[in-house]
Amino acid sequence: MKIINEMTITFKALSVNEAFARSLVAAFCVQVNPTLDEITDIKTAVSEAVTNSVVHAYPKGNGDITINVKLYENSALITVADAGIGISNLEKAREPFFTTKPDEERSGMGFTVMETFMNSVEVSKNGSHGVKVQMMKNFGEVKRKIVGE
Image (cartoon, rainbow, N blue to C red; front, side, top):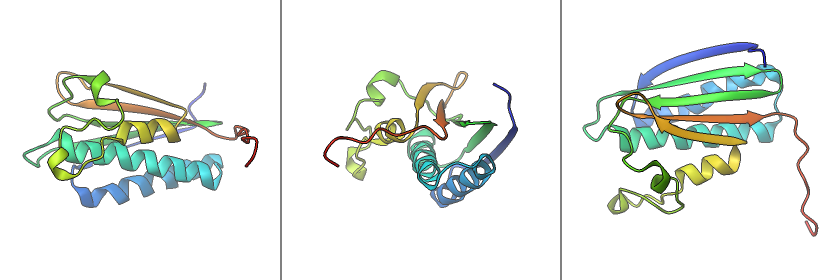
C-alpha cells in the first residue's frame, strides 16, 4: 500500500485536548473521502485511545501523547502513543469491563469500543515506557445488513 499523506502531532496529555485530537484526525482523514459513519467511527476510537493515555499513562499529570496518521487510498492507520507508566498486562487490559480505576467510575470498555469501531486494533508497549495503540480503518466497505433490521 502506498501512503498518500501522513501527519504527526504531539500534545500534552490533558483531557481538554481529547476533542482537539479527534477533530484533527477526522479532518485529516476527510481527504480520502470516508463516509460520515466512518468519520464518526474514527472520532470515537481516537477519543477512547487519547482518554486512556490521559487517564492512565501519567498519574502525576505530566506527559505527552503523539498521534500519527497514515492515509492510504482506502484506509487510515492511526497510532496513538504515550511514554507513560505502561500497562503491566496488555491482554487483561483489553478485557471488557477491566479497569484499574474503579473508584473513578471508569467502565473498562476503552479497548472494546476501539475494536468495535475500527477494522483492527493492536496494543503494544511503546519502547521501555508507555503504550502504543495502532488502529486501522478501511473505507468504502460494504456493511452487511442484519436480517430483521
